[in-house]
Length: 142
Image (cartoon, rainbow, N blue to C red; front, side):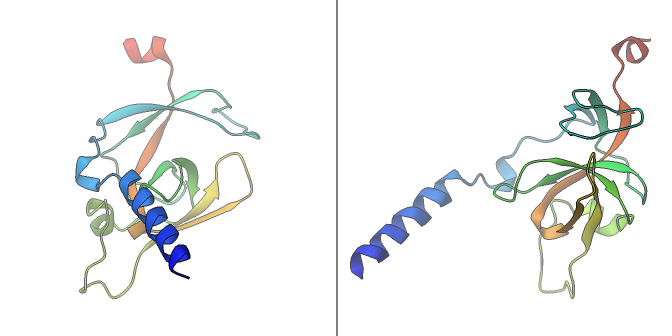
């Protein structure tokens, strides 16, 4: 029994060492690029394209967004939003629960390039950034 407890403690210590505190994460640029990795896409954006993301634009229902989970909760994912985000909650990101919060807002939508539904509570997310479309270097340089 004692041996199992020691192993559990070691695993927790190792896991805790890998988690980077939120305040140490680099800030997002106002606009940045992300490469699309989706198996089945249609329309203006395809697998392998670069998309331009805007940090400061409030996402609305119907927008394509990049959802950045907090460390330990997965990788960034492109989502077609089913619902808009509350401006108050969105401006509080990274969202931390407090005793004053009666409930937690969620981000809901469909994973880009699939039929899978996406639902995540705001307290598990680092950021949600609106996609402005496919990045075209020739047009952006003008």
